[in-house]
Image 1 (cartoon, helix red, strand yellow):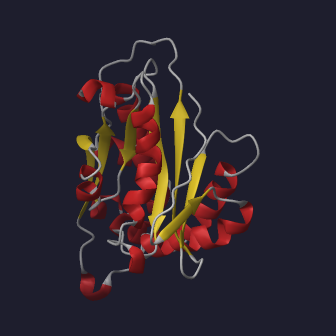
Image 2 (spheres, rainbow, N blue to C red):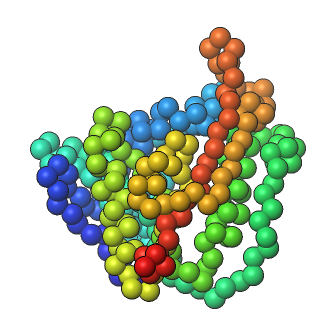
Image 3 (tube, rainbow, N blue to C red):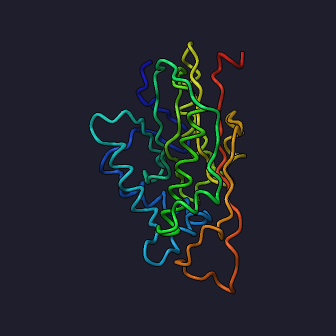
Amino acid sequence: MHVTSPIKMTPLYDFRSITTVDIPACFKIAALSMQDDKQNQFKAACRDDPYDHEEGMRGALQHWTKPGSRSQTVLATDRNSGAVVGWMVWNYHEPKPEIPVAELEPVSEQEGQKTQQARSSKARLEAYSSSEMQKWMKVLTPVSSRRMYICSIAVLPRFQGKGAGSLLVEQMTDLADADEQGVFCWVQASEGSEAFYNKHAFETVGRTTVELDAWNNGDLNDLPNGGSWGMYSWPYMRREATSHLK
């Protein structure tokens, strides 16, 4: 399958691949788009090991855009001003021989906390959410299948709800739909984004939910008025190959 990023022309936005020159604008957009995300705020409150989403995305974008990377990138720019308004990165995987996978047995929050007591609250939560994602991927995205997954997507807050995000996702789903052998798509979504992905035929197939306060190792800055961090969920969402839907 040839997976070169398609180029779309629309009345409002233009699309092209991300270059190294675009990286500063992209990681700043990533930080702004996730500034209200509760689990990011939780990790950023870690006094000795604060999470910096902008810096994390800088490193990720450098990796995704380096020569030889298998990642596909697409950048959305405002047609009138030329300013970057959003971007997305996805990967495509060819099928490989199937390897038997044990039935999913997620590590409980309590067990995950016990094995990471010496680590910062940020590091503990990151390790747990990463291990959960890997377990869901092994069961729900078998290596024998043709698949794409969204690594990251970000749209400037003032452009959200104006079609840029949908058009970015369609850069990937149009490619998947054009493949006669069938390619399904996958994403570990952030909390509150399920309705957006539902519009593009993604369905929730799994979920990891944590009580954020239980992951506080005593190294977080206090919330105003002694508030609680509450619950947070990562939905795991899958879009079936069109050959399966017909």
